[in-house]
Length: 553
Image (cartoon, rainbow, N blue to C red; front, top):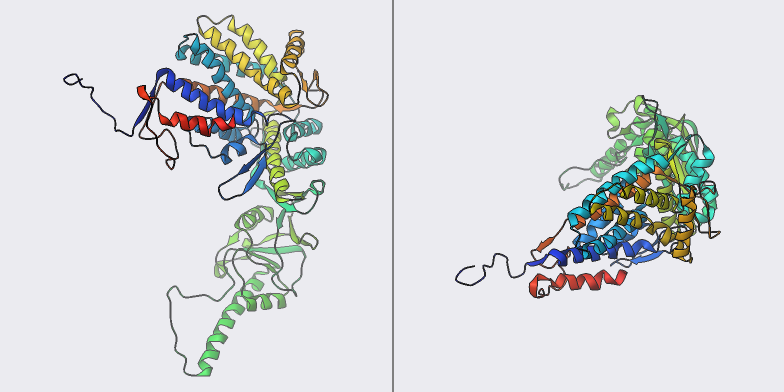
């Protein structure tokens, strides 16, 4: 204070929210994000249609895709989106579960805050509960034989259920298991390592999903550059070229005056000779097939066809890098320095119906999953579902632990955490109990999305677990509580551990904030109108939050 006047240390545009207002603001934003994806959870979850500013349409129920595509400009909401992104990176699936649990943790934390329980006590309780939950998951999880094909197929089918891949999940799950096994190697310690970099996914429209296939080797979706070229080659020497087979151009712009027609003919002859020399260099290497990332001149195409060499131009860089592993070749950037050791070896065949080249190497480590669907939207959602399933099967092969799905693990964890809460002293005990209640959101939402009564379902699940049935979960197709492990609803333990950890840490991060200071509108997008804050520091940004995020709830 100076002479009775308050000292102003922030600019006029700055906005500030403190104490309970800040907590309410953050919790509302986080819960709005969780509400946005809750309806997509489970086999009977609904899809979202997302239309971006350019008019592109995405139809999906994949949690991380929904949150990434939504135009969210709230800083707290973006923190919750990071939970989904982390879950996707670390586990490959379970993004909706992680975000939904984070939102429920904050909802229950809000009730505790209303009871004048300090955020520090809630944070400590949530941390204790999270650590205990991870230990219990490890205790409940079953160690499995990763050679058990039926189990791996169940894991894949569980991941795909409720997504675009569900209709043909039996066929696709077999492809996924075969694909993961093809790229699994054993390290020096005798552990299974799944290298998904050696798995390539290609998509095609105009065919049914059931016609998807797994191919040993790679695919090149291109045509031969000349009609007179061969379209197949067995035991071929393959050149992967990252250099145009064209006339070399000067680095600077030049002008040449021609006074004699013979001079012009010499220029043309020189260009022709250049191209012929490049083709001869390829032929001298012994290459039968050339996959070129750059262009191939029309005259060079003619010479290549005369040499009986199959050539493809404008191949994708990613295709060349994958073929490098398939045929054990090097990507050549300079023909003059290329040697026969740079060539790869394999079989190249042509599928005229699909207009594809299939490239198979001898004992190739790389495989290609060719996904087919009727339209672009179908194929896109199918690819998202397949990617999730590949990740969880890979996790299962690497980790070797699985859990019963259908909400079974969440109900069992909640029961064990309530028992654990009795051993926790102080107000943290209430936070542990709130954590247990939050985990039960998963079976409740599964029931809601299946059109069932969530309370009745939860009561039945609790009763089954009280009787010692650890694997009792909800089968949303029969609407019964049953042993979901035996029913084939199986999830990787690592994904559940990651979901619990990510949700807990995100909730604690939000709860620890008691003051929000913004240089302007409380938004990460400064394009909108900035209205002044309400008396006491409540910002106009909160109103924007209610309008923008509230529409999702």
